[in-house]
Length: 277
Ligand SMILES: NC(=O)c1ccc[n+]([C@@H]2O[C@H](COP(=O)([O-])OP(=O)(O)OC[C@H]3O[C@@H](n4cnc5c(N)ncnc54)[C@H](OP(=O)(O)O)[C@@H]3O)[C@@H](O)[C@H]2O)c1
Image 1: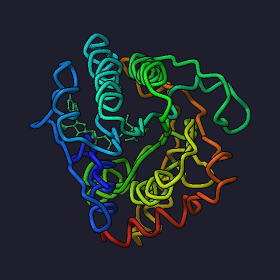
Image 2: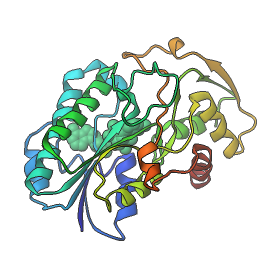
Image 3: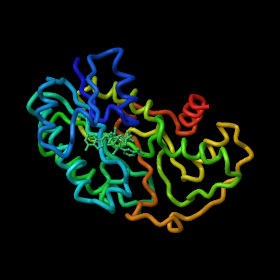
Image 4: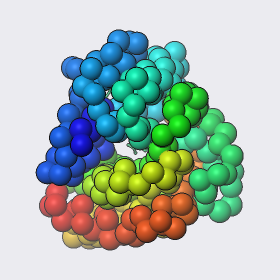
């Protein structure tokens, strides 16, 4: 089956291509091949005649989106629309990757797939509108929200381990709570999901939730960096251009009911740290 993956050089896209390549005819598209802000993206993708499109490309710099919401809208909202149009033209199924940030963070329990979205920053608004744009165009659509990804070269865990090389004390936010998620685990879950015709909304995250502080601690412990001390700080003490929702753990109810379940985040962090040393 021909599967087109956008964002193929990004953290999730790379993991998806690596996981699916041995079993399918995978075409990975990087930024050099498609420019999401251009409607011609639909032509480029449709010409490849995909059976499935996994749309992992996005403008993911949350602060950059806050500073330039128009570009975020053109890439994350309209870009997703062009990809959905390509899926419609080629009669392909589509996976639209979305984010925990579609929620406003005011809940007191992990967000389920059908909790109401209420994005509070330009990145989140552009991603949620992207979900809606794809829903408007496609029936055969999986909207897959992920969160706090790690697995590639640039992510929170890599940053913590790098900073720990030359700093004995690190300050970490302890009031932002989410679901850390291994990109490779998402890739594996997507491989299962696209074999089904169970279209709809999914939260494919590692099980459980924690603060940035807890995640940093788990990564340092897994890496044997016991000499580094963490000091808690509040998100409010770290000024950002846009608002960040404080509490966005996701609950994977739908996938789990179908047997698509990701391991607990602690095991995923341990496995990732073992691969990066
Ligand atoms: N990272 C997270 O913690 C997180 C959390 C929740 C949801 N998500 C979602 O998960 C998906 C994958 O995230 P990720 O962490 O893998 O992101 P990533 O590493 O930043 O990769 C995104 C890819 O999209 C490409 N891209 C950016 N702008 C583009 C454009 N205008 N046209 C074409 N390609 C473009 C980038 O290419 P260049 O680098 O060459 O520009 C990059 O390779 C995204 O939909 C993101 O919103 C991520």
